[in-house]
Length: 78
Image 1 (cartoon, rainbow, N blue to C red):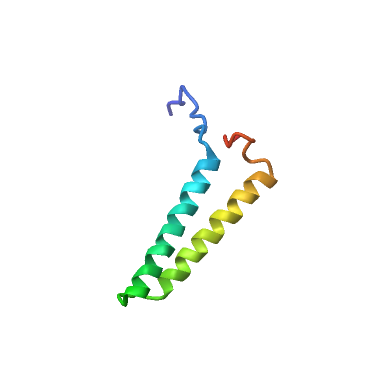
Image 2 (tube, helix red, strand yellow):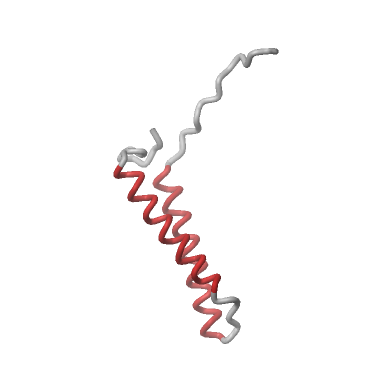
């Protein structure tokens, strides 16, 4: 069995940006659903709860990553 010659290292990502962009995407979805609801073309109401859950999880994840020092002050994953 051949052994791997190189170990893959974890990617260096700016986790702050990742959390913020993801949360903003959920917020945009929620706003879009709100506009559709006001226009009378409301899709399934459960989609709004999906967006709320995504926004809440993204916000909690951002705080959690800081609390356990998963990311540094610049936002880079350690």
